[in-house]
Image (cartoon, rainbow, N blue to C red; front, side, top):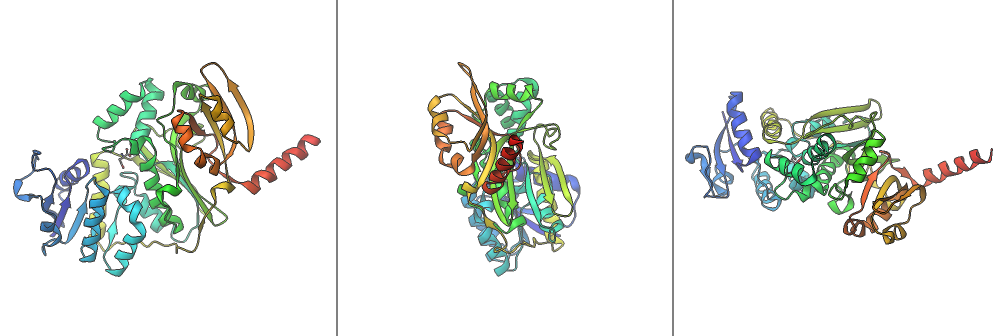
Length: 412
Ligand code: HSE
């Protein structure tokens, strides 16, 4: 029987503790739990509880650490010192893993000690392992999906039940889906962390959060949802990582999805990961993306895998792909704006449609990713919605080719 040292007894930590009991798993048990707040009442034997992290990190009886705390800075300290001491770790902390993945890979290699973090990406869906293992010898063209349960829950409730944004967010918080500061969910940052982790496994590239253009759902209004409804579209918050000719681009944005898109029917806190493989084609993985037991289930699976000797391969070397320059990436978007100066400030490559009413104005067309990055603050300050109309970005040179072809067609 192996001894687990558990950090954190919140939504995921307590879920893991209970799941371990329910499963009657007999290869490991919880030996000690480190928590922060001595004033909180916990439904667990007080003998297991300590407030001193060294009581786990320096205890020879500990065979494995499960890190399930909120604070990414403290989590990195715990995980890195455990790896340096040769203690295998399972982590559920997406921000910590996304911000430090290169260093964590280096530590795993140097100290020959594994770190698994399936629970950090899309709750119960085993997607880190899938990208790392199943696709080891198959180039991936793109990974996109719904990586955040809170925002999908909010969008579903607004679209299906006409609930207002604040009510829907409150429900997601009560159900334990939302982060302590929900801006991480609704602003798209949590989705970006998960995309960064998958990108490292799929393309060998570690994006910094500042290199992933992120636009959230807080600015959406009923006009945007009506625009969607009239055309039988649904709004989803979609992180995307695309490889185009060995260059990779990553962004997180709301998107209008049609019935043909696998994301159309993903409701509530469910997540989906759509992987386009060069040989296998498009595969969609779906499941619960947030909540205590779904996330704890992935932690539990990782514990079992570590005890069976499993490690990530990180199959793609760092030199295989480069980041694409945002000025070369062209996106098809809908922009709802309130102030005319926004439309004047933002330069589209090509405008397809414009609509102006007293209270509702939008424009659709092609825009470069760089233009969105340069104007992100202005767009947020003026409560503008930016929503993708097509899932695939194009390169500038491909757009020029398409426009030339259209011009030839219009001549004949
Ligand atoms: N706040 C996250 C979400 C929790 O809503 O998806 C799971 O990572």
